[in-house]
Image (cartoon, rainbow, N blue to C red; front, side):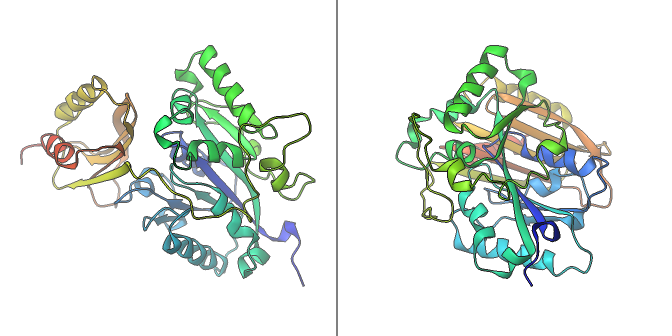
Length: 347
């Protein structure tokens, strides 16, 4: 007997361009007193896993996938299916599954997973696609002329969404927020738009949407133009979309791991140095660090020139480490590694 929607585990696909605040939102969700048992599946664009260490929650509920971008690497898609099946086989039933795509992922193939003829379809229900938008930086990526020959994932993520969260309104002006809102509405007329700072939002706005069980069909949301409207972008429904798209090959990642402990003063000096440089091609930075003579795990977050380095939580049973990832264009691995190594404290 086929299960009804209410008996299936709802799945939310969380998307958004690099630095939009997806990990911050996950931390907020996992720490809120909502009484739900939630599993998180993360897909990173990079050589080393960082996001799993940045999410504060039950580590047994965090599943990291670092073997490629789930939207365009077959092995990564197979890994996603494997992890979902593993979750479904658990004796204790989950209340919700959240899949965080990488910041450079096209969410269509991820959503398509839940329309395939597979046991997964009988056990899960796609609750909705949530797109986070960085109010301060998204326009430069929507208008990035260097990706004209490739899929613009910043556009795809917005077009695919059922709910759009314009985040970081605390660092944007009202004019910037208004401009971003107008652009988002041009790309996606049907999705409700909500605002947030630090990705703090009423969870009822993003979980429990049942977006594909109402009369709104996904194809209408993202593919069929209503009368008298001229859309700049036309996209097929995800189950018809060719999953073989092309990333901008000039965008790469550099992962760095260093032994020992970092010097807090040297790190702060380096961050100030970065802020003074041209960071147009440095899209995203994130890292976790062990600082000498300090019991706290320090995190570094950066989106272009907006960079912060701060204590995050006390080291507990996890192994202290220093891991950093840079994502951008024309990255100089040797220079980045050498400069970061200069911040290692003397033994």
